[in-house]
Length: 379
Ligand SMILES: [Zn+2]
Image 1: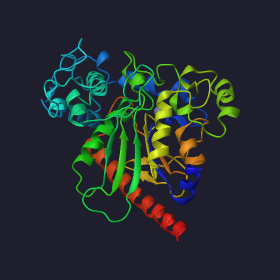
Image 2: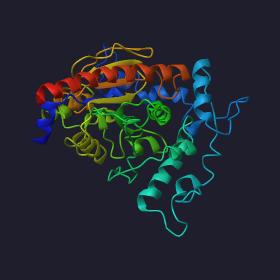
Image 3: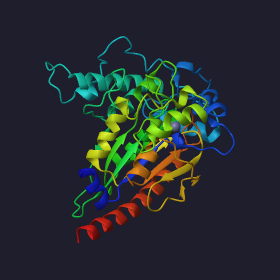
Image 4: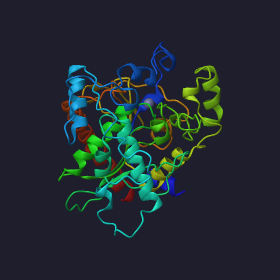
């Protein structure tokens, strides 16, 4: 009832990263011919497990990953940052990281959540070439009660409006890494959080979830699905889930395990947590980030962005159980799905910035429309 009232009064905006889940490719079977993990592997510069150092590329001491990877994207050279710095604290649950301990008295042991968040950053730093452990810790991610199947935090960061604002600000939910093998969708969230950190004009409330599927990302061999083999972007409780999700998985996806929607809708803890955020945060827009299909998809009302950076709008079909289907179609929240061009290579620095500016401009328009709707409904 509360949700229905909310839907009637406001126009939620949901920004989804990683919309490949809702992909209805023309003719080509992307699941078998061009799956994101398949596409990622030959060009991996991020998964440190499988990288070999390239001669002549030196990692700078601070914030070098984004730069080097962005530079690499520009020049089509994969970057190897090497695992050594990331695994220095392997074998311990408590990396000696003063940054997160600055407010904690020495005799106060870290909480379960603090330990888990530190471990998460350690693992992310060891996995991603574009995000170091320090980059992750610097974001000071938090968590509520969101735990993955294997007990990793579903970490997030909240932002409020910069400065004083009298009008109710718009709310944006930004989600990366719902598919665990789409590394760039996680990394770009960290870059955009760094933009938000320094933005004195931010006009929105944000919840940024950089790695919505931490188990999938942080397996030794990263995988699209969560630890139980469920494609989280097929597990949302869309109205057609019971009728179509498993049926289409059998017929259309030929039971490809990468697209398994789960035994029932919203069976997975990662999806349940995202559902809770949507219910409680009531985003005006959802932005979901995926890779590697190099396009922009959109579900829901009212006006899709035509372009975000170099990505052009290409409407894909809606899959049962997808976030776009659930939030965009069923709930009526505008959902932008960004499909980055590569799962394993970050866009250039200029492109990352240009995408961000385009997204912000579009969110401004959406929120303005949403606020107008609210005022109209209230009046
Ligand atoms: Zn995806």
